[in-house]
Structures are given as C-alpha cells and as structure tokens.
Image (tube, rainbow, N blue to C red; front, side, top):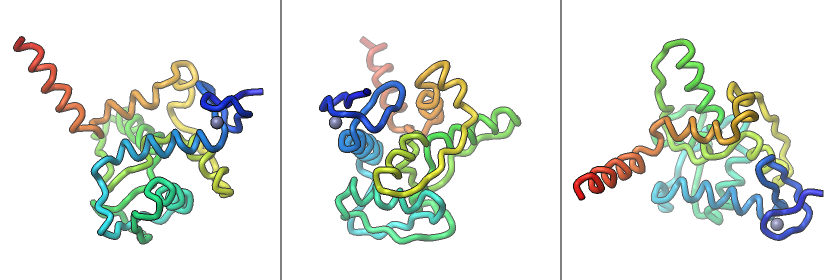
Length: 178
Ligand SMILES: [Zn+2]
C-alpha cells in the first residue's frame, strides 16, 4: 500500500515520484497554481474563461484556489486576457511539434493558470471533483518515463517565466561585478 507523503494515510494518488491522499494532493496542486499566478488576478474584475473539455474541472479548481473570489464567465474564443485551460503537455507538445516541423513556436495568448499541471495530475483533480476526464498521450511521455522532470524542464525553457529569467540574469550580472 502506498502512503501519503504528508500524513501517512493511504494514498489514492500515485504520481510515480510521490504519492498523496486526496486532501494533501489537492493542497499541493492549489499551492502550485496559486504560486504560479501570484499577482495576476484582480478580484474586482470578471475574467473570461475558455469553454472546452477542461473548463468544468478548471472552474472548480479556481473556485477552491481563490475561495470563490475570482469571478469568471465562459467564452468560446481566446482573447489576450482570457483564462485558458492549457495543461503542461498542451504547451510542451505544441513546442516540440513546432520544433520538429521547423516552425516558430509562439506562446499562446491568454492567462494560463494550469500549465503548471500535468495531465495525470489534472485527471486526479477531476476524479476528486467526481468528474470524468480523459488523459491523452503526450509526445514527451516516453522521455518523461526515462527522465522524470523532462516535461517541467521543457516548460521552463519556454520563457513563460520571463520575469524570473530576467531576475536571474540581473543577479548573475550583479554577482559578476563583485
Ligand atoms: Zn495526506
């Protein structure tokens, strides 16, 4: 029997690298998305959220994360300030296929709270919310199996975290001066 890393109770979620009970798994996910989105949302505004196969779970998760304070309405087309439901593999697969086809990769427009979640993590979130959701295969699945962390490393290489990368450049420069 696998046990939860945090409380030692029986783990329902086994992610290979670690296992959690439902409560602690959800805590980890909420913390990760919240951290990724720090300073992004203005709770006085109403945000549009794209309507697709992920929206139901995405909305429930946002409600948990922001305790109902984030107001959203569903839309069918993606604008610059629309919340997307892209998951990590949606972004990395697009990047890898652009690379293979020698096309320029463009970061999709919109706000992407869920790109820090793997499909298998989103599947577990859906299960906890009693919603059916199918995990589609990804181009990086085999690499991820051989080298755990490949998917997150690929995401990080895509400049989604521009502020962070310029900060680290700055600190590198400062260090050089010393
Ligand atoms: Zn636990």
